[in-house]
Length: 50
Picture 1 (cartoon, rainbow, N blue to C red):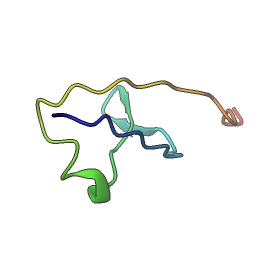
Picture 2: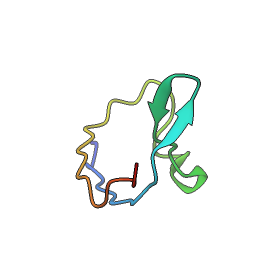
Picture 3: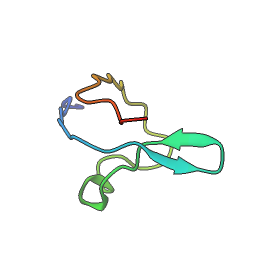
């Protein structure tokens, strides 16, 4: 039976070409394999200064 796991991480948004990306920490690689479906909620804590 599958047990839902919850992680909270705080990340700075990176840029990859013209895309904004969030990189998943290597520590979670075992639990977040390619093809895994995850719910992602984003809360903006601080906006960058223009």
